[in-house]
Image (cartoon, rainbow, N blue to C red):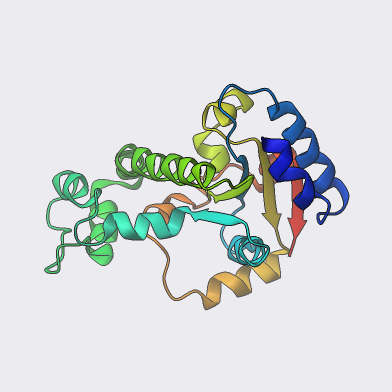
Length: 220
C-alpha cells in the first residue's frame, strides 16, 4: 500500500533525499499498519524551517507546525491554558488565553531552568498528541509522506530509539550562516513562548550535534 502511493511521487524527488525516502519506504513495507513516512524538520531559530515548510506544502505534502500548535494551545480554550495558569498564577489574559508577556515575566521571577522544565512537562505532551493525530489523519486520507516541523526534535528525543518511538522515520536539519540567522531572527515580530523560550542556547543542543544526527542538512 505504501509503495503504491510513494513510488509515483518519489520519482519527482532528486538526489539523496529521494534515495533515503525510497529506502525508508521499502523498510516500511510489510508493516502491520502502514502509515505515512514521517520526516522530522528541525533546526535552531532563524535557520529557515518556515521556508522549508512552505516548500513542502507547495509540493503537496502536509506539514505539522509545532509553533502553530502551541499558539492554539495558548489561545482561549486551548488545552494548555488551565495547567499553565495553575503553574504560573496571573498569566491568563482577559480573553481567556495565555498572556505571553506575563508568562515571560513569571518565568524570570521563578527561575528559567525550573520554569522551562515545568512548561516542557505541560506543553510537549499536548503537542505530541496533536502531532500523532495529524499523522493518523493524513494516513487515513491516503497520504504517503508528511513533514513534522519540530524545533526541539533532538532535545526531546536524545537518541535514535526515542526518535523511532516518536514515529519519526528520517530527519532534515535546516542550517544557515550566522549572518543569515541573525537577519531572520531580527525581523521576527513574534516568537512563540515555550518553543521559542525553550529554543535558546541554554536548552538547544549544539548546532553541530544536530547536524551530526541529521539524515540530510539543508543550507539556507
